[in-house]
Length: 309
Figure 1 (cartoon, rainbow, N blue to C red):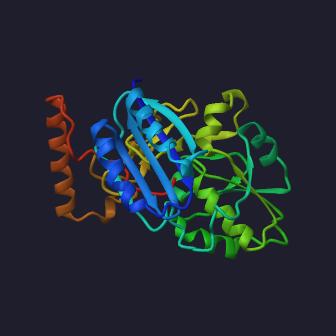
Figure 2 (figure 1 turned 180 degrees about the horizontal axis):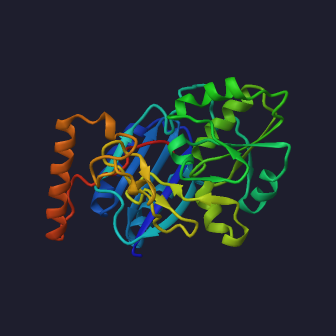
C-alpha cells in the first residue's frame, strides 16, 4: 500500500479562505495530490491522497499556519488513488447542517477517546446516536446505536426535535466517520438544552485504528467518501461497491440481486431508470472495460461526491 489517504479538519476563523485556495490548489497539483479540500470562513475540511512525501509536504504547509494547529488528522492506506483529481472548493460551511448558531469553536460536546468509548456506549442510561446518513448506517454501526434515518445532515435538527427530549435523554453519545459532523451536532444539541453530550474523538476511523478487533463494538464496514467506498475494521478497502447510477453502497449480497447490473443499476434504482439512461450507463461501462484492457483509468470511475464526513 503506497498511497496515503489523509483526512483532516479544523474549525477556525479563516478570513482569508478565498485567498488560501489560490495557494493550496496549485501546491496540491504540483505535488500530485488528489482529493478535496473544503474551505470556509469557519475552517477547513479535507480528504487528500498521495505519496508519503507529498502528504507530508502538505502537512508542513498547513501546520505552518498557527490557526490550523491542533488539526484533527487521520491516515489510512490504499494501493491506488481513490480520487481522480484535486479540488479545492469554497463553501459557506465545511460541513453543512444549515444552523448558523451551531458553532463548534464556541461550544461542543465532551470528547471521548476510543479507549473510553466502549464503556460509555454500554451504559444503559446513554442514548447512542449515529450522526451519519442512513445509507452509511446500513453498512455498519456501533452496537447499541440508533440511526436518525436521515438522507442528509440537514435533516439532523428535525430528528432531534421529533425524537429526543432533554428531560428524558439526559446522556447523549454521538459518533460519525471522522468526527466533524459530531462537532456541529453536539454544538446544536447543547444549544437545544441537552446537558450531557459526548462525542467520539476522531470518529469511527480513529476508533478502528486504535481499538483491537477482539475488543471492538463496531459491526460491519465504515462508509468513506472516496473510491474505496468502505473500509473494514483493519481500515482496508471493504467489500462494498458503489452503484454508479444512484451512488448507493452495495454489499456482495446486494450484488446478487436480479436487478443488479454492474455500472448500471441495483435494487435501489433499477425500476426508476429510463431506457435512455440505462443505455448511457451500459455504454459508459463498456468504455470503462476498454480502458481497463488498455491499462488506463476511465474518467467516469464513480467517485462519491463531496459530502459531510
